[in-house]
Amino acid sequence: MMPLVFTGATRVLLVGHGPAFAKRRALLEASGLALTLHAALPDDAALDSARLVFGAGLDEAEGEALAAAARARRIPVNIEDVPHLCDVHVPAMIRRGDLLFTVSTAGGAPAMAAALRAWLDQRFGPEWADHLRSLAEERQALRAAGATPPEVMRALTARIRDSAWLDCPCAAQKR
Image (spheres, helix red, strand yellow):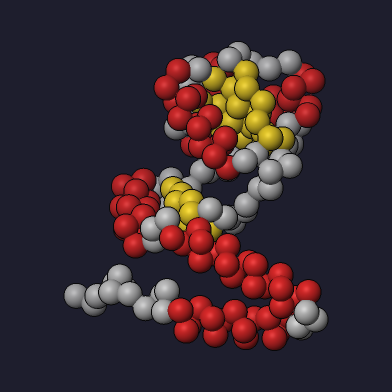
């Protein structure tokens, strides 16, 4: 497995219908990707412009056709809940502004991924978006002032340590 984070410029095609489609649409929209929606199998032009393809709520024949069309164009594809039609998997996620936690079990143990996601969700609340934003602003200010990358890293590491953000009783206890 190799985790990747796609930028907002990535053109994503989502094909499908029903509740699974709506759920996948919400997830992709929250990610800020450039999303194009199709209720039925898209035409060649739509596929040719995509860089990542998702299918959700499709029947077996639709999923196979979409996966084949994407793969023929060397576009990574994910057909929800059909592992053999997936080149990529979507991990369990927690988003706190630009801070993104992901958990993947390569599809082998979704219950574990869900449990770890819930564990992280309880321990990293909405305030973490502000923590990250303030660190990003400080990083920009240090770089603008001429600090070298190692100096920036030392300063921000000290800020994280001094803030005690990571000093919490949430560390796993040995049993």
